[in-house]
Each structure stands twice: as structure tokens, then as C-alpha cells.
Amino acid sequence: MINKPNVIAVIGARLNSSRLPGKHLIPLAGKPLIERVVERLETCERVDQIILATTLDAYNEPLIHWGHHLSLPVYAHEGDVNDLMGRIDAVVKLNTPTWIVYVCGDCPLIEPTFIDHALQALQSHPDSDTVHLRDGIQSIHEGLHFYSLKGWEKLIDASKSVMSREHVGYANREKTVLASLAIDDSDDFSMPKHRISVDTMADYQFMSAVYERWYSTHGQNEIVSLKWVQRTLRQEPLLLTINSHVRQKKPNQAYPSVSIFCHYSAAIGLGHLRRCARIAGILQENLGLGTHIHIQGEKIKFPWLSGNVSWHNDEAQLQTAFMTETSALALLDFKIAAVDVDTWKGLLTQQHNNGIRLIALDQLSALHSYVDLAFVPSFYSDIQADNLSCGWENYLLTPVTNRPVTPPYCLVLTGGSDALGFGNYLPDILDKAVPAEYEILWVQGPLAPAPQLADDSRIAVLESVHDLQNLIAGASCVVSSYGLSLFEAITSGAAILLLPSTGIVSTHELLALKAQQVCLVADTDDAIERQLSTITQSAATREALRKSARRYGSKVDGCMRLTQAVESLLQHSPTT
Image (cartoon, rainbow, N blue to C red; front, side):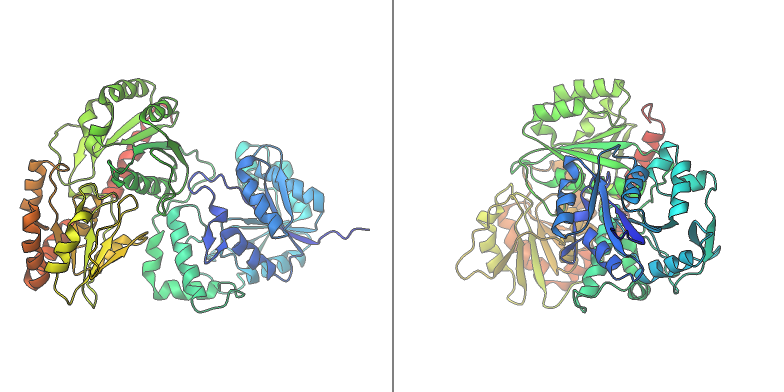
């Protein structure tokens, strides 16, 4: 006779998350997130078997293969991919346990002692179907549901609506059918109350920070202590800000999707794509929206690009993708000189007539007559229109406080592709003009050729920089080309020298920037050396530039302004 498990823990997981696709297999301190969930369940004394419940489709094959590699029982459901209750019920019927723990697969801080505590309480009260924390108890726990077999069968019978099939326990919220036992927490997990599920990139960044801190002082065989997490969050409240803005999705609310269209190349640069990746994160986190980025350009893995992404070989393919779009809102971000403007005017008109809300970004503000909103994430625009938004407050950046470090360093930013070829001659000027007490750090963009260095050059070249803003914030001075990195430096309160910008910025815009006095400007190659000497040797000049930059950086609120604009457009969209 086969012994059936008394208690099963069923992990529900699919890689199809609208906000962070593939999240269960992203690494946390060297292991997949889902493996961290399993590790914690394995320490539970009252759990007899752990089973992964996913769906049988091509998208989730990597998750199935991972489970088999770990020798973890995997159930791949062949039915409706959205029928989570049906998927879990199939596991229950196959195993006929006495008690069931349902675990959300995106919660890598589930607490084993609480799981054992809740199971013990449920097992000690055979007339109870489930458990809940007593009224008034605040706890950090997320992603856990406990049922007796009898309670589960009641819940399945009551789960008739679409929402109750997609969300475990929702049927009991629609109408109480379960006898629930009120229990105390297993310990004091009340402070701070903070999200510990991973739904967005900000959540992942928070969880990565927590895991990296723990495993920097603990062995890999020790699971992260939730008590330690709480103490750490109280001691380091800045950790909380990483994902405190993330909006939790409500199970009874439908969330529209947003599609984003952009391009990149060595000639165009990476600015449009980087900005669109940032926007996708903003909309996912602040509004709970699913996003889909359509990119014209060679498929390359960028460390800051994740989520639902499609690649297109040329502009015609991108236009086809745009015309087959059914999202409630589309956002476009192109270098206007690099696209067929007349064709896009016609396509925008058609899709606007189809009821899709449209936002044109930055240079595409020239097409303001064809969209609902022209959003310029810049202090300057030479276009005026009723539906155009522009100003320092529109920058889509998160300011980082300037904090120069010792020894001092000069940071050089020539853009993702070094489109103006500064790498051919600027290193010689830097070696000559920057004082010996400075280190010189050259950030080589992913599409840029390596700078040409002399054999005895002092310049250190940095590739694959993952934390550029903090690198900027620590610099004594920044030498930058005109582009996104320049304004990242300004909003961080850096002392900046702007390199010659002929061909990439208009004379009017450059004059407007000079008037703000947020950076020194080298108008010609001959002026670079002179201005370098000024910014590196004059502490008073650096402090004056930082003071001015901080004044403008304090106005930056573009993430919230764009969030509010999108929310307003979606509320009045005929497709939502």
C-alpha cells in the first residue's frame, strides 16, 4: 500500500507574470527565487511533501525542467492556464492529503516557524477548515493559505466565478463557506509591515538587497531569517524605499496593458531603449499594469532590460507590430530623424481612431497633433502645444544624493555608443589635464568601441556598469556627452563638464542649458582641456555647480507625473 502524504505544500508558479515575466527563475544570491521558496519549506517539520504546480505549455517548460533537475515533484496542468484552483485541486486529488498548505511561488521569505505553527493549530482543531490571524494582529507574512482536506473541498465547491478560480481563497471572501480558526502569530512579525512578494523589478531589487546582505555573513545552508529581515529594515529604512511605491494588484480588478515602442543602434544610441525600460518599470510598479516593449534593433541581453520584450529587425516590422496592437495605451519613443515620419503619422491616426490612447515621448513631440499627450522628459522644448508636457520636473530619473569619495575620481561618460567618437582623442586630453591625485574612470557604453589609450594612460575603463547612478553620485567631477547620463548627473548634484555637442543638440537648447548654470560647457574640442583644468582644480567651481544642479534636481518628479498622465488617459479610454 502506498503511503499518502499527510501534509502537502503546493507551490503555485508560472513564468507568465505580466509585470515580471520569468520571475521564479531569476537569481537570489546565486539560486533561483523558486529554489529559495523550496529551501524554506524543507525546514518545516510538519510538511511531508512539497509539490510544484504549474502549467503544461512551452513558456513554462524551463520551470518544469528546473523542478525535475531538483528532483522536486512537478504537476503540469493541461487545463485552463488561468484556473489556479483547478490546478491545485488536481494535485490534491492525486495525493489525497489530510492538510494542504498553498504557497505563492513569488514569496521567498515565507516563515517556516509560522507554517508549522498554523498547521499545528489546524491539526489540533479538526472542526476547523482553515486558519486566520486574530483581528488586530499585523504581520509581515504573505503568500500562505492553510486548509484541511474537508475545507479545501468546500472551497472548491464554492469556487464558481472567474475570480474565485484564478485566486486561492477568493470564493470564501465572496461568501463565507469555511469554518476559520483565529490564531496568534508564531512570533512578533508585526514591524515593519512591508511587501515580501516579488511582483515587479523593484520588488526583485529589494529582495536581492536583502538576500545579498544575509549571505554576505551567513553560509548557503542557512535560510534568511525573517526576524533578521525585520531588524535590518528597522535599522536601514532606506531599504524599504526600494519597493515601497509598488501598487499591489487587486484580484477583483482588471488591469489594462500598455505597449511601448522604441529603437536603438550604434548610430541612434541606447537612450530611447533605456528610458523605455525605465517607463515599463514605472507603470508596472505604480499602476500594476502589464507592459510589452517592442524594440527595433539587434537582440542583445542588457542587464537593465527585463520583462515582456519583443525584438524587430527593421522599422517595417515595428510598424506592423504597432498596427496589430490591442493594448489600451501605446507609448512611442524614437529619434525622429531616424524614422519615416509621414508613415507614422498615418499609423498613429488609424490607431487613435481605433480607440488606443497614444503618448509620444521627447523628440516625437513634433507629432503632438496625432497623439493624446506629448511628454518631453527634458527641461527644454522648442514646441508649444496644449497637450505637451515639458520641464525639469519631467525627468524620468530617481535622484541620488551626491557624495564625493576619497580618493577623488573623474568619471567620463561618452554615451552608450560614443556616437561622436570621443574615445579617439579624449583620453590623451584627460591624461594631460586631470591632476594626478584624481583617478580617471571611463565608462564604456555597451555599443561603444574601446577608447584609444596610450600605453602609460592612467584611465581605467569600466564595462557592464550596473549601478551608474551611484557611480555618478560618488564622483568628484563628471565629464559627459549630451544625453541621458548628463541629466542623471545633474539630478544627482554632480559637478559636470559637458563635452562638445555639435550635431546632437540644437543651438537654442544648448544656450538654454548654459543659462541654467548646472554644468561647464566645452563648446569646442580645444576648450575641453581648459575647462577640465577649471573643474578639477577649483573646489569653489565644483561646489557652485553642485549647488545649482541640486536645485534643479530637487524638482524631478517625472515618474509620478507620467504615472498620473497614463492613469488619467486609461480612465477615459474607450478600450478599458
